[in-house]
Image 1: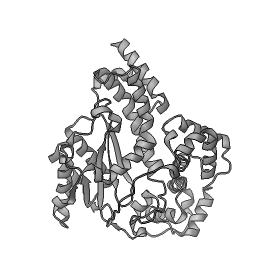
Image 2: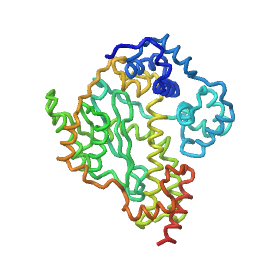
Image 3: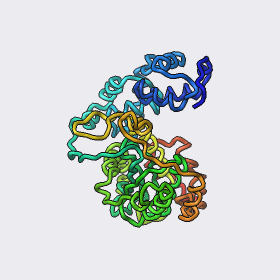
Image 4: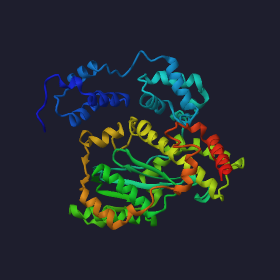
Length: 409
């Protein structure tokens, strides 16, 4: 560890200020923020007292009294016009703080939602939902098991109506979502392996075990994991892959959260396009236009849901549970605070290059539609996400793009 700086150099540290702002917006408690500061800014001496002083210096507050009710109403109204209408007030509060940078108390968001959409708020209230009793699950620590599976709810009848398939991974100890990807399909083993490789390149740490279903799409990923784990020598590499049905996979339970709080919004638009005759699932042009437009828009919403709604939400205390109840991102980064172990294994760039070469996952296309088709679409609506196409505009934008594309051909 570098020698700690006790002078005033931290006052000019803009990275420090940005990180403090981020964790306050996420609603982390002071002791949780302190864990991140000690780890990520170890050049400075830290205590709760110094944390408070530095937050005061940067004028970082949990509640900004300068924010007006109209600003909050504007943000909430925009969310209610999109997939945010499926969120409860706790999740909406998290998103308003992080996506719109409005540090307001939860009760204000609740009051605004009650004013704008009282019936919807009551429908989404957790107290009126009935669910199955959760089973017991225990784990050695973070990165002991990463659970992975595909999700086909957006694809429609027989998983073939719409070219919108999702695949993802969750850390079972912390419930932190590690990655979510949407593509035209999720059954290509090289595609799944490529996503796994991308994640490992970014993290440089591999979980002790992965939990997957025994399907053809997981074969390459399972081989990659066993291949990389054999160098650690702590167990038989084949035992590091746990197979089981999707129904008993932890991420399968989480897909319900995603469906109820995000996907339903897009399913309504998709059903409308098909029902009104604007979309034909057997027409390749329709399928490509839909994927060109919706995949980047939904990927953006998946990223927002992962970071602002789920990974930074506070898991409420529940009876008869073994896993910790706090913020998934904090549990994942500081397992020792919860009596858990850090179970991940380091992987080198050389090992990753080696497994990439042997697996062939870098040889697949980086795009889900042909370059010529994309270029024609881009001349009509270039880069949907960068041009701020909102989820509420997707159906009309699809109709416009399809009409203009047909005219140009």
